Every structure is written in structure tokens, then in C-alpha cells.
Length: 204
Image: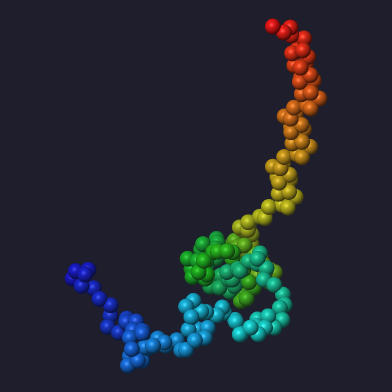
């Protein structure tokens, strides 16, 4: 088969409507737009939520709370699932949890919850543990290790110090400006000396 012989599946495509080709077509004259009005014009549209000039419903509804930009959506694992998937004394890491099908990904973080029972010692590494999960793992002879995978935000004071260091000092900038400008008194003295020299010069 040649690439030029490829065609869409029958019924998967449909030709566009023929507009303005006479009244007998059903889409003639006004081309399905009606007579006059906002939506007969080119470029007419309504933004989402527009209610004809009335106060939109989204503005009438009360707003409460907020969504924190620093909230971490953990991948959750129960101690019961760990006890079923791993053998006694195993090293349990987020990567190993993915390999055993307990979670689909290690991002952004993994948290172990206390649902279920565990009777075998496991060395579990995760980004967070609930109190119940930690107690059950340590009671069975295992250990809990925290993984610090969170990004640290820059300190506000240090950022301010960097900003102050990058900005030139106003007083020093003014001093440089005064040094670069010629002194008015010295310029006047120079002009008077030139005038005096010309007067003292004998005429030819």
C-alpha cells in the first residue's frame, strides 16, 4: 500500500456545510445565523459564565477558604499492604513500593498510614508516617526512616539581603555624580584667567 492510498475510516469524517448557496439548500441567505442581532455578526461570542449583563452566578456564590500552593499530595500506602507485599526484614523504599504495585509513582512524596496490621519487621523509608503507622512498624521490630525530598524555600531575610547588595548605594552614587561634574567655581576661575591673559597680551 502506498501512503497516498491511505484514507480515513468510512463515517469518521464529515464535510462542512455549504453556506450561502441559495434557499433550497437550507443554509442560504443568512447562512443559518438569523436576521441581525449580536450572533449574526462576525466574531460574536460570549465568555464562559456570561449571563446577559446580569451579575454572574459565580459572583453571587460565597467564597470560603483557599487552596494552599504548598500542599503536598502524598502517595498513600498502608502498613497492611507493606506486610502483604514484602518479606521479613526487607528494605522498603518508595521505588520498591512501585515495583510491587503498591503505588504508581513516587512523586511528589510517599506517606505510610496505619491501616491494617503488620507482624514482621520491615525497614521502611518514606517521606512521611502517621503516628499509628510508626507505632505498628516499630512495635513489630521494624524501623522508620524519613526521606527529606521537599524543596526548601529561600529565606526571606537572605533574599532581602541579596536585593540590598545588588542595588547601588544612593549616597555613593551621588558622590560619584558630584565627582564627575566640574566645579562651577573652578570653571569660573579658569574663565577669568583666560580673560586676564587676553587683556595683558600686547596688541600688534
